[in-house]
Length: 216
Ligand SMILES: [Zn+2]
Image (tube, rainbow, N blue to C red; front, top):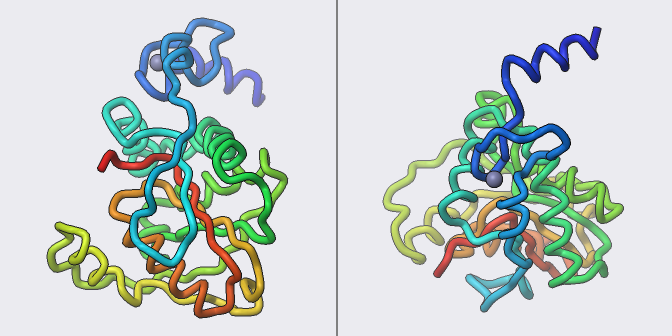
């Protein structure tokens, strides 16, 4: 039954490249040869914000990646995690190493998760964790919807995000070297705030890995 369904699905919705949406040839998986050939190397950069040590990213957040990411986040393409996760793991390996006691992630609010049906960063973390041999642990709770005044500019974002997270159980993070995953790094306000509460709960150190970093 499953085989028939898969065959039918292939006919109705032929697989497309995750990044450029070109139809894939038989034998091509998830990404077309042209996109595969132009994948960026994992990279890092100066720290954005505070509270953590360093960051690594798999992509710049621009053009084809941005469009793919929006499908991943909003258009039910949660299965993209199976493709993005290993690339995130590769960024961790090449830029940060594997000296971590705990892998955790930036959660979305429960309301948003209900509406969307999935938490894209958790899916990413699971897929990356498979490669890294770590299970993501949910340590942060996002508080409910908060009034968003202006989100323009570094300071405004930092103000808006203040108090957005709390640590579920300090015992989970106390004394740990933490690898914190998120989907996109922009000003660093989100990971800074998460790092602040993780540190308060006793985390020893925090490094950040993201799927994509916005160009400065
Ligand atoms: Zn492509």
